[in-house]
Image 1 (tube, rainbow, N blue to C red):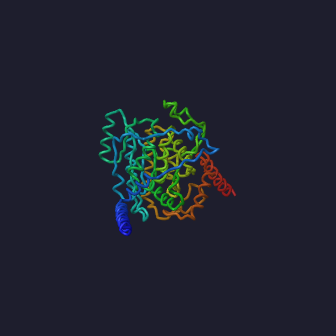
Image 2 (spheres, one colour):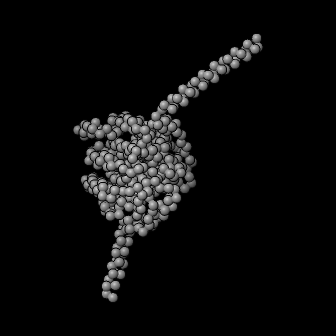
Length: 425
């Protein structure tokens, strides 16, 4: 009887092992048949994040660490384009542009700019996608125009929260959530306002370089870092409820919300973290708080941005050899003038690109700074020291536009004085 029992047990074990083997093979086959988009989406969905304890030198109030308020971004999508990314295998960059429903002209300029993808060896198969994010309006006429625009270009995402300055942070979370859910096959995401001009050619090269760095997927890729004392007067003038303000007296380091770039993995971490920390204004400070809780230090790439004298800097004869690639067109300006600046620099950069035909390897030179760096489309790790040297020289020599003008004036005066003295002798 005993041998028969053993035989039955062994037979049952063999059947169970066979079923497990078949199940494992089926799962493996299913995973192998999954697209890159589905694999990335699953990986992002299963990602876990951990928060650190509040550092002793933190500027963030204890309440944000000890009593975080949960948040759920569950707004209904009025307009959506769920297949804009899934149709592609891999995407290098997604432009998530925070727009306002009435900025039709700005959106058209951005559409025209994105058509000019660089034609070099490393960018031949580069795929870039762009979506415009916005809230709703009570104006039925404008809403119908937005609907027609969406039907024509298929690049508008609209959720059912009311468009307002107070809801700017909601559009930031909207950008993170949509990127993770519908564009998980993108390597990088740029979250930006529609007043920001981006030189896509330079950005493509910078991203290829950034992918060679260790830990490139666990931090902001490009960030205009800010900090400072809390400024509530700006928001009081916009009639924003005090309960929506950041409650501290000093802002932590944060990336200016006008435009920043991050790997999709880090965008996903920001989104997951946002669900455990209720949103507030300013929206830039909001991403700084989440970054600190995720134990992510922020490095500034301010030398890539232009806030003042934007037209002059993008029209400079040596612009194509500089690192400058972002232009903020509406800094302390009206919508009309911001639009004219955006048109101007977009046209100028296109003409320059046609004339100079960028080469694979260029020597980039900061305007009037005698420090050259090697900045090809694929920068090796050994060149990062030169990049840091160039950044330090730029920050020390030209802290702002005023100092920049003084240096040029002094150089001009010295040259004129030398020529004048030689002429007299």
